[in-house]
Length: 160
Length: 160
DNA sequence: GCTATATTGTTATACAACAAAACAATCGTG
DNA sequence: CACGATTGTTTTGTTGTATAACAATATAGC
Image 1 (cartoon, each protein chain N blue to C red):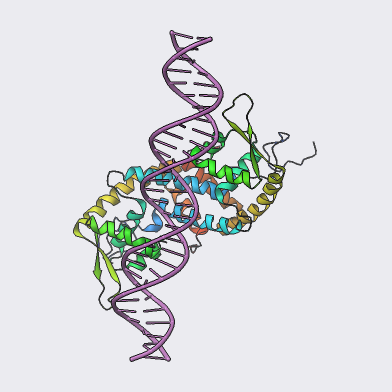
Image 2 (cartoon, each protein chain N blue to C red):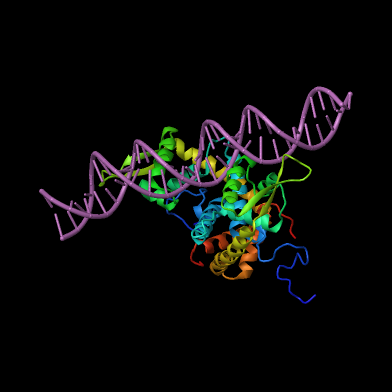
């Protein structure tokens, strides 16, 4: 056998070389992992009737209240058209509210209600348990930090 | 000031502590990264009119031909009901085909057509360029290996 | 061998996520 | 003031995915 194997794991097995194995495809594994994590997230927040998108909206409003709808939506990569129903729901549940922005009669500034603030507190606690579960799977906090760093690189974030 | 800061980056700024920053949420960053990678993937394969799911099906059939529909679907996490239309499309495009499985008149064994084989060759080449783009973003092949490893841990794969 | 149960591929259907276009109200600028 | 841009909204369409039901076939138990 003249050393011709490129794949390294299927010499002479008739398996066509050059065709990527699923586990070697970054996009594929990324998707599977994201699905898994979201699955855990969704189950974790099932009782609170909170979906990932709603979580992110509440967290953003909590951290920087008063931002305009479009600003919040943009930061989360949500089209402002699709953001409307999302915000409607949060408002009807009494968790967040739209206030007339002073100075601009078109835009709404987003805030948490008092109940929303309490809700976000509980939400944050519940989230921590979810995140800790991921850390265990990853094998420790350093692994999580590394993962966040690598994902950040894909997203083009500055190398800190 | 007695050292009470837990967040470490917003002392005295009125920002509620305990509420996670978006960039610190594994699930969120994972989703954004996956979206980004898929975006690049989709643009890369726009000319070939190939979607991620179709790519994965063709790659799987190419690597292990003769598998039953349900087997392929299951490996990819696709419900067999949704797999039908997917496979229909690949068959109508002349890339893959269903053969009557010998021994079981219910099941179909999946194979590539000759044209499908050529298509997969080209597909693999094009994919490599996409993957290489990701490697550059990540900062090298080692970073990619690390990422695949970490994602594998999330998915519960054996530590090799 | 016959019957009950399970599996395979399929159809139909519903729902959620997401994108694109258009619109009224309002803003900002020349 | 007139014009173009922006904000929130409605409407609509597409895609991905989940569920239920079905006919054909296979398998296991008796």
